[in-house]
Length: 398
Image (cartoon, rainbow, N blue to C red; front, side):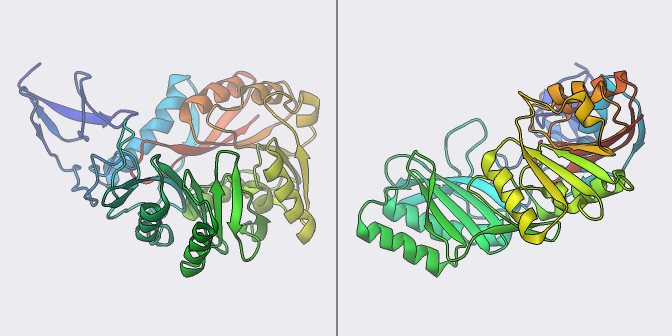
């Protein structure tokens, strides 16, 4: 290696990469690596705002300034397309969600001799970082860290407690897995906790799935101005900010389509945003999410027809896909290869594809391009602030 090398990019897992291809933990573009391994910060090396950074596994990129972070998100998405030799008509501006915008998270806690520790786990470890501050959670979730720590100190057992928190229309939905709450006194303590901290719902999971302990009124999340029931464990976009960007792009991409099939629709994040005046078919495999979407559509008489169907095992066939003016896909991280093959073989001409995994998306995109589709628009999205987790929106036509 020469005397010094420059860091030129950030790799997928967050390491800096030098001109010679060497990976350096904590490096960002513009940093200088000396022969002895010393890293000299450059103009894009930021001071991490959180005291837990470099230990806590919740963030990987707080040492990158806004420009470097935006470039990382952009490169992850654009390079995924380039790796499949896919030409992009237009790369739209990269969107980054702001700090303290994460509305759902899973934290971990453990009772100790002095009380309890609670927070995210260390990267690559089961050790829990005792959270004193957090720059990614919305204030409503972080406000519960101290009270939950006290609760675990009083009622936690020998095993770690998993804590799922989600901000809903009515407030915070909290599910505790692994906490000991046997007997009347413990149950009353949990109810007092829920009342004191105005929880929207408190549930316990003793290994057989969540059981509701406290829920003054049925929980909902508003999607496209329609309140949708929120079953335990339902998927929700991690931030309201990110959801707005994704749905806005979907509306833009599919403007003018009179009918849309929303595939892997979940609770109806895109279906309800797209519905009216257009008609939408919302297709989902998870039964609870399907029924919640159906109930909301029926209650508000929204032009959303729901279909309970596993698109991995039984994708919409080519003749079915071709009946719609446009298609929207928002699959899990594994992608939607089986469904994309059928779309490629159909007469469909407009596809909006939302993805949380640029790698699986690029493989699916290649199938569409080989079938005559053109990637018209592509937007990188970083709604997991300071994380290596990257999302995107894309629009294909033929």
